[in-house]
Image 1 (cartoon, one colour):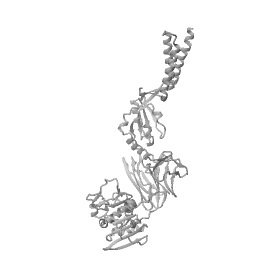
Image 2 (cartoon, one colour):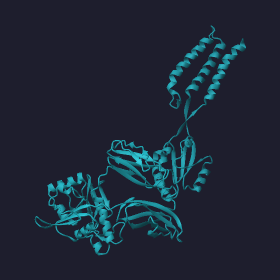
Image 3 (cartoon, helix red, strand yellow):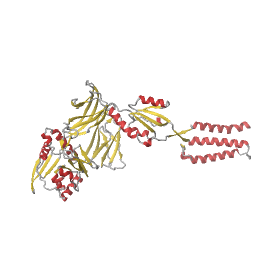
Length: 579
């Protein structure tokens, strides 16, 4: 059978053919008068045609035909000049106005080639274009903020840094970071340029859920746009820190002052002579630590060692330390000197190379250079993660081991840059310290979340059948991941703007993920820029350029019925006329 021809009721095909064949034989038998005369042949042919029409009316035959239609999909930010140019090339080209989430499948049935003009289609609509050859003619990036980067979660006392890129700014345009009360916390004035980066900073002082505002003003302080920056601020996490040095140092002196002032529980052990140590205790009980064992290290979140101590660890001590890092999640930080960058042991290799530079400017916080060792880190392993441009941590099991390039970071305090010193050590400790194990872990690929648009998320939990509820009380259906047994995925369409939450009850505890829902009119330049990037990547696949699209055509059952009725009428009427 020709693969290009199909039947709607194909499962009844052979039964229908056999039945039709039997009916044809019955008609031939009925018309048989003892001789093969002219009337016999005519009536047999008419009966065959009529029964074939009846057979086709029931089976519904269809056949494929290649679609040759062309259309242009008009999305946000399309160029009228380009549209007019396409119309000149093909006056019969069909125009389709794109609305996110709207059904495009039915409108593309007769379309073989689709030209997408403008910023492009939303990610959640890609599936509708998978069977269509698409030529994406991207529009210009909109004027405004096209890139934004800031942490959605922070801790009290840390510096909040908002970095971004403004496309085609007008000279004198001002960006202001406003707090929840409308107070201007930081601002920057843009120059007339094709693209300009910006950075705004403020210190987070209170825990809770906040919505900062990024306000755009013109040169006369008239507000152009206001966009929200939601932030969840957690209280300072009190860390249990153990510092072990071969001898007292200024680096440790200023570090212990900083840690104790921040309220962390701190034990400092300094070697005086062979077998004798000096212990200092801050915000904690007096419990001396003479040997590194799994039991003694289990109490601490961070272990800070100088290079001499780290290089002098015995094999047994290294094994205990490795177990504490891998299995208990202990964080280890090695205070560097020149010897560390040429050293490796069974536990770690920081993989550094000489660069001859003895100064660096720490990213984000300070414009003044800081002393460093003349090395840089190679970032070749998936388990090796950089902390800013001054430190590195290596993931080992549940824990991490890290160090930095900085030489005498305490000199920042002496130069009056205490805030920079605090930010550097706060970022290092937060990245390296032992992480509390949560009963569930939420993840989302969405940057900002908008009303009525799909919000996709996943949750990892050991619970067999997790029941996830929205903050308003209704259950949210989850689908189990095909590869990870403890991962579940879900999609919701937020209806309520502002702060919302997802709540997962695990045993007696409830794990909460807070998220902020915005209006679709907010962050439009950013959404447009992200759409351009996503569409360029998606439609740039070569195999999509030469797709051959086919559709199925069929004759209406009415015409088969009319033909059958005509044949049956002929067979009924003609004998009467002859008689």
